[in-house]
Amino acid sequence: MPVVRDLRVLLRLRNFRNLLAVRLFSQAADGVYQVALATYVVFSPEKQTSPAAIASAMAVLLLPYSVIGPFAGVLLDRWRRRQVFLYGNLLRAFLACVTGVLIVAHVPDWLFYASALSVTAVNRFVLAGLAASLPRVVGPHQLVTANALSPTAGTLAATAGGGLAFLVRLLAVESNALVVLLGAAFYLCAALVSLRLAVDLLGPDQPPGRVHPSIAEGVALTVRGMAEGLRHLADRRDARLALTAMTMMRFCYGALLVMLLMLCRYSWSDNESDGLALLGIAIGVSGAGFFAAAIVTPWIVERLGNLGWITACAATAALLVPALGLFFAVGPMLVAAFVLGLATQGAKISTDTVIQSQVDDEFRGRVFSVYDVLFNVAFVGAAAVASLMLPADGQSVTLILSVALLYGLTAALLRRQERRFT
Image 1 (cartoon, rainbow, N blue to C red):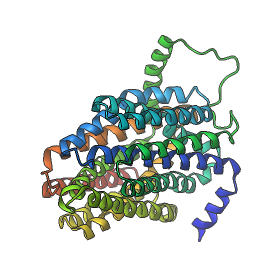
Image 2 (cartoon, rainbow, N blue to C red):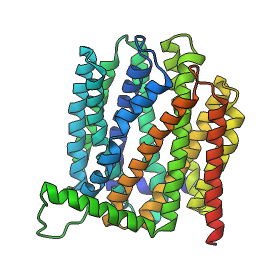
Image 3 (cartoon, helix red, strand yellow):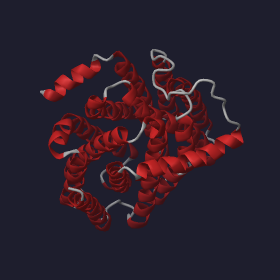
Image 4 (cartoon, helix red, strand yellow):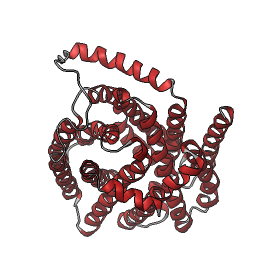
């Protein structure tokens, strides 16, 4: 198969393999850490979870990055990205250990959220840096395949890490702190692996004799740099359209995830352990969809183009979400999880490729940080909307139909723009 051949070519590239290893360890740690937080907030026996509580937790953990994200992008265009991976993962390992201590100490929720916030704040730098670094280790003609392999492999690593966290959580009572420490160990591995990359390999390229700005100058440069990055993005139609579509699809995914959490906790199980096991199965099935997207996306993009494939992903989700979700049963919902995993990851691979191929390297860090911010705002906004629509058992026909309509509008918008410019 051409895809298998292309993957073999990529894996022969030493620097690509090293960057991929950093991503795998880092995102495996993310998966472990996120499951630890989710189980502590949603599946702890002493906590009475509601859609509003889930939305509040997401807001506390994610909304501040709407402020941090743009500054991360400007700094990524100045800092050596390899150093970001080294020191960022070391810092996350330390902060994750702090979070584990706070769980054991049963501190107030606000202090726990503050610690979790610190870990995921550093995550903004690492993930944006990974995306911005990929064109430095592969050729332009290899970007689609690299985007099929690298981010998807990272997502699968996060899924595997989450599965390992679920296993530890199910086997050991009161194991939330242990799971967090497992995430810290993976962060440490990511930092050590980054040492295999040359310091200047990943860019950005810096003019000789550059003087670092003061804090005040850095803030001004950030604001000005973000404006320049947005203007740069506005002039690139395909990148703008892909980013808009991906944001809308992320909103849909977030709303459905909150519904899934409530279904697992209250509709499909009688206790926290059974609900947690069902959630783990659903995440695993969705991960299989991510893997399928990595296999089929390069082949389909050759025939439909990147925007055409994003359109097809949104249209498929629009048709199958109500067809499968309105049963509110475990079997059809697991099929829906696979389809949404494939559609969401397929659209993301194409979106990453469009942005990487159209955005100049000097702006890439800023644009990917904007991408990241839109992801967070869409996800938190979806959780807030879902909290208003979902009953306690998670079964909402209105939410299912609204999400399907939004998927359909996304596909229609892309199709209209494609016809307009062809």
